[in-house]
Length: 424
Image 1: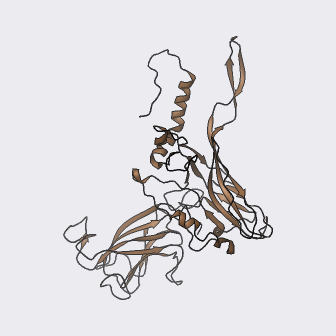
Image 2 (image 1 turned 90 degrees about the vertical axis):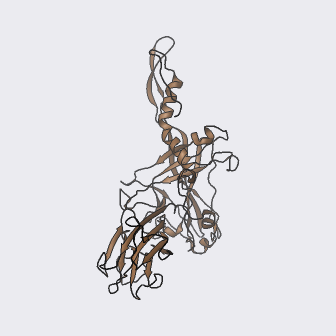
Image 3 (image 1 turned 135 degrees about the horizontal axis):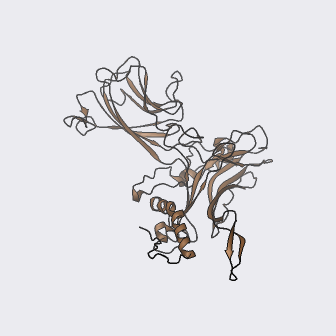
């Protein structure tokens, strides 16, 4: 338990430092928990001299639809759909790590401090930044968050008693807050432009990069050209629960994904095809069984929903499948011939995606296959029979079969999906 103030004698004086300690413990308790779970680097450790670990936690919901955003995940920086040069900034929590190199409480993330960026603009929980026009060359602009950890709210009137016992009103600041705002550093137009530098941190003000945007030549405001998703290079440092306390740090290999092919943006004012964003973080896993031996669990040629708790679109899938047409039974029902298990056919890996229809243009409501099981990868399956695990245009994870042939196997499928590439 952390140290706390305790009044042990009735009538004892209460001093100003005591009140400040109580307020500090109440206000920073959530940040202390964040520090324990996220474990940002302490200054003076693995970080360069004088630098501080800075991360964000983007807003999101663990469900398919919800709130003003409609889906459970969304990009921190996204196009607005307007021709006025604006980009939407979704809510996030900015976290500033330990700022001293001292051991003890500081090293154990007791200095971690955070602030919430959650403005309301036009009735939605988003804000806008604006990109200005260019003339004849391209330009990189940098979108950032500014975190002021020593912000003061509006002053209030308080009454003070002087040494002469006279009481008079005085305007003072009585509340401290962490202010988080967003802004844009405009780059310089050039045939081969470079990304502008992030503003320098101070002792109480810190800057976090969110994204860079390549502005095409002759972009005007207002105009008839929208800022597209492919012009946004997401670079926000996304925090995660540290592996040392049980978290799973799943994300693109940031150094390679962010830097490879950076120069090729310039030739087309658009991201390279192999680019992956820094905010494509996290992993989701589902596992389930389906038994088609005998009467199928749903009519052949139709579909069934497997999971609709999250939005399954714009993800990469991989996993394992064990399938057999023998007499195996679910392991939790019988351990004699269990599936999954080590006695029957060995499981095989698979991969898939949900960025677009890769099955057939004639198949409606199809946003990509997470997995395909047929005679090519399932032993003894009849040619023409197939089990498809796919994602609908609304983001549901579903299964469907061929209309003619029964797969005639029992399947145990363990399916893992990456975080969303929302700006894809």
